[in-house]
Image 1 (tube, rainbow, N blue to C red):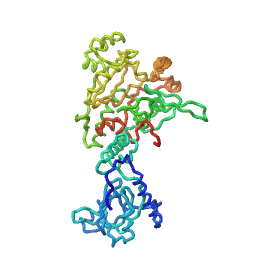
Image 2: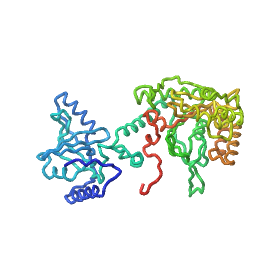
Image 3: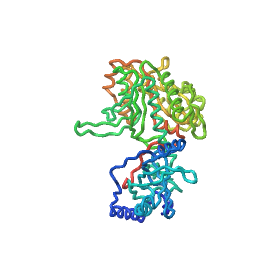
Image 4: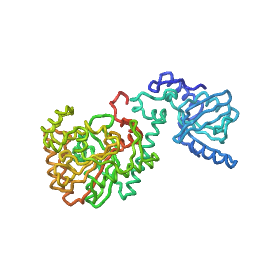
Length: 502
């Protein structure tokens, strides 16, 4: 049986599918169940190979029952070599007509295709070319595939198709599998590192009556029984702080957040966020936590405290650079934002230097926009940007001696903003005033401003200790650790515009 001709997996011809349906009907007519209910392997492909290697050293033998997808078939008259693949690797199998029987052999070569799942039983041996191989004594069809796999010559390269049919992407592109294997190991490492530092993992509501904790528009839904509008959370912050108030001194959550915003290379409406809060800490403690967790996670996942991004080898070893937003802007633009403390003065200084940014309605937002436009992309080495305008940081504690600023940082690596942290505001009077200012912005048309969360304010009035909090996106962290430039490459099923039938 010849292998399938190279084809683009996006196009499955009617003939290809009809031929496989004919084979399916023939198998059923001959009494073969093409989708049996049970199969019990004794080894994965990797385990079979490892067991054989160990047995060879002592002169023993290995019998194995292994399941996998047919990914290569080479028929040579009365014998056939093939490869099956599972989640651990590939294994060569060998069938002979006089060992499996003429009927079973004919069925294998005539009615099985690349992409079908089979279970095989037999003894391991080594071919003349030195490849460890399972000599098949019997096989079982486990699942008949009705569509051909992506071509091994051309792979699956249509970017949108890769995202829409991620299962084909994983089959065809080993590098994509590696990205998601690293992502899983990364999440495991982060959990371990926080657990080792005494943090407790918790879960907080995804459906919330009041959204908050970030500057973002929410997704809205409706609970019929309660007859109330609910929102998909945009952040975990306000519920995690309730737990600090309740006496859990170190908590974290890794979960989905949702923001009703545009899609870009670094934004997906549904994303995975980590947030951690520590009592009796401030934003300096959070900086130390971030640089320790990120560098140690790199060692555990990648084997060294370094990553590659956009041609740069970036060392994550602490300590990372710390620089105020004021000094970072001054270095790049020559503008001292403290010398231009009102919006007209700042915009005039920008115009004088011909700096083109989107105009903003307030001084704090204009500072943030100036930073994002002129500074962010050049922050290649790990950098904490500290001390932000208070008006864009409604949940952060004011900086002593500079009440127009807050103890807040964002951190950047490879020109990418990766996380946000505060010395958390624990003054309920100040917090109410900040919420009221946000509410005025909200009623004036700012869709990303905070509503007033009275339940959180009530909790805060019972007293919250000095607290440091930090949040970062797992998706962007994975982008950095795998060298990807688009968030869609690190989310298994990213949000896309809908198409008919999808």
